[in-house]
Image (cartoon, rainbow, N blue to C red; front, side, top):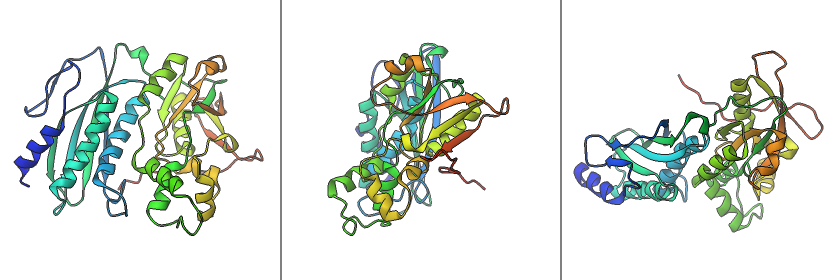
Length: 329
């Protein structure tokens, strides 16, 4: 399939939504009617680093969904309304055109489910498959948005859903755990694999948390053992997380037993769950969505201006844990 044929086929997959987008795919640039406040995030995934297309059962559609979900999760973490997405693809030699169409179709399906318009992008050649997604969200006023810097001493720390499922799913997909050897049911394997391959951005939950009184918000992409530290530093407070209170993904204990690791520690460090981490004053707890689990508290910084995270085990002793760390250079 030639470049122009591919671009034409991609255009036919996409649909504009709402009346914000004036010009989109097919013009040299998109034209969008703006709301008062714009929220922008850029995300890139690279084969062999953020996903592995060579793993059994992994499809191009999984890659497209995951790339779009990760980008939209950044808007959810700000409690923004989703708006537009701009997609760049670097395609390696030999990748079939049908796989590219499957990838973009999955992105479009998630865009449709979240009210997002894929309004433009670019396609080029590259040494490996690379998927870049720039998302634009909107709000009517700055105060409608949340960031990482809103945690206050006395706040509760919560998370919107179970943790560790994506990491367990990857362990099953890449062969580190043999489900047959450990008696892991097929339904559990499928659910954990889906947690890794097809995460859902919590856009509606982000807005609901803000409406219910959340003070700080961010998504759990690198694991709470890292992400809660980011929140603590941004807010200049100390955050304490209790491992015993983390909500664990169903089936995680069996996979972790096969890996020889503690399930709660895995849940705190594996990352890629794309749930939301929040803080809120105790008076707001009852108004929060039912999916929220409270996992810790916010304290004044022991060193003013220098927020830190403390993760404690069931025995109350601190645990030195860290989630995913991005390496550059």
